[in-house]
Image (tube, rainbow, N blue to C red; front, side, top):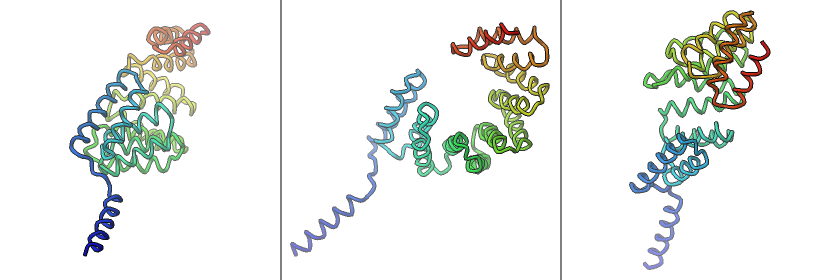
Length: 250
């Protein structure tokens, strides 16, 4: 009888050792605290601290989908560690299959990697989610994926839809301008860069894009004004110097 009980105890211990650890309520709360600390650090520009806090959050509770997504964003955009970002986005979606923000972010990694079909497939899934609060992001990025694939018509269709959904979508107007600029339609490019500036008046890049475009049209005085404003508003020294250089060459 003793041997049977001992064998059963050993077998039970083996089974339990292979089971997934279920975080306690205290661990979940601690993970949430770490996640919030990570967000604060990120907002303050402390990227390394944010990374550390997000990592501790997912180590404490791997089922913290928000922390998995936040860690993915940081690894993707700040550290360019695409494979690890994909891993965390997939984990967030495993925990919360309806997490459209994480699905969009996963698509963004594939877009950066040049895997356009995979990115488009994910963006389409997101756009089928009627509860997703920022569909213009997925719509606009899907348009850019189509453009990179060589389908300019679908690109323009989707990006125009994105700025219709959100008239303040700076990236949408910028990308419309870039597509028209790169396809030789300077007049339309200047128009879209003008919308970019109008809707996003604090973005120095918008003034630079429009200024360069207007210079191509021979509107030197207005172009000079735009580049001077870019120089004033630019927070990054490299952009400030580029706007100054362009203005001085007019």
